[in-house]
Image (cartoon, rainbow, N blue to C red):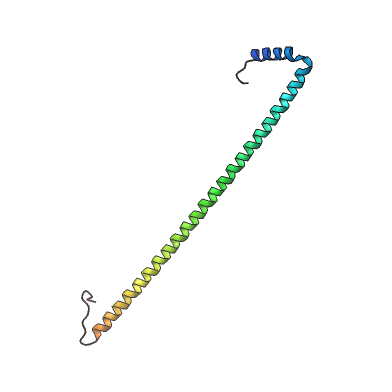
Length: 118
């Protein structure tokens, strides 16, 4: 207890008994005990408040991370959907070009574009 050995504690209590007397020493010990109990309650309340604040911050952080992941997934799926739409539009345009080339080749006096030997 505070680095005080049993011998030092007995000496301190003996001096306190001589200074305060046998009537006031128990009252002082009682007051000191009540003061220490109140101090412990106060520190446990403060510790509990800090723990509650820490838990709330952790929950908020987790929720923010979840929301960010949801947003990233949403953007990724929108991006992937947009790419798929663009690719299908490109494929449709290429099919239309091929049909135009075939129609032009069927008409007399028209030439087929270079590079399409189909």
